Image 1 (tube, rainbow, N blue to C red):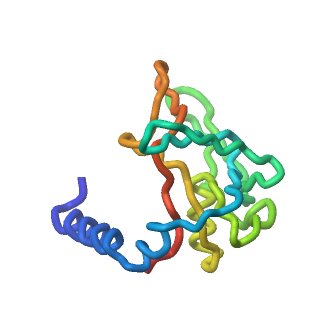
Image 2 (image 1 turned 135 degrees about the vertical axis):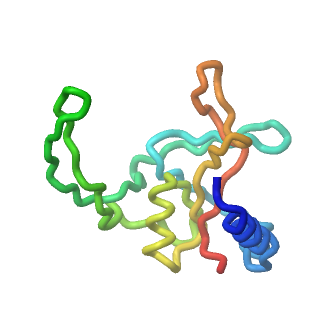
Image 3 (image 1 turned 120 degrees about the vertical axis):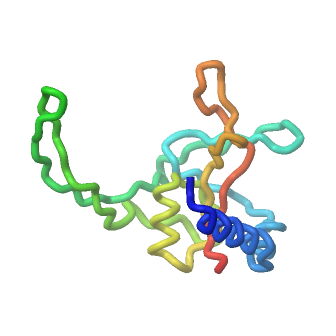
Amino acid sequence: EPASGERIAHEGAAKRLRESKTFAQLFAGLPPFAEWINTTPHDVAVVHSDGSTVVFQARPDYGLRLVEFVHDAESTYIAGGAVAIRPAPVYVGLNRNLPPEDTPIIVSMIVAQYIRDNVPDRHWVFTPDSNPGSAVRDAKGAIVAVRGLNAWDRVA
């Protein structure tokens, strides 16, 4: 639980973002794109507000993954057994070029963070909104659809 001052600062930043004219201009009236490209390794089903569903098929020809530098592991003993321990990977790039700029793309959250931080002029980057209020789960608890997408454009 963040300290009271941190929570208030976070809530204020979130409110400013929601009220931002830039955010409203970018996402309130998305242009009618001819194609959306799902670069994740699985289909993404999105439930519309009227209950209908659209499925964005996974596109292996556009599959975006991060290229990582992985450090060597060292073994240590934890709870009576050897366990490999290594520093967290360092992400050094994408495995392929991004789809055309005027095409909205659906990516994993970690790829979206990398694009936001390293490809500042790229727009129309979205991730499935798998937060508890958006995720649609089956009887076993697996996410089978989402009720929305998260936009990763820079709006500040």
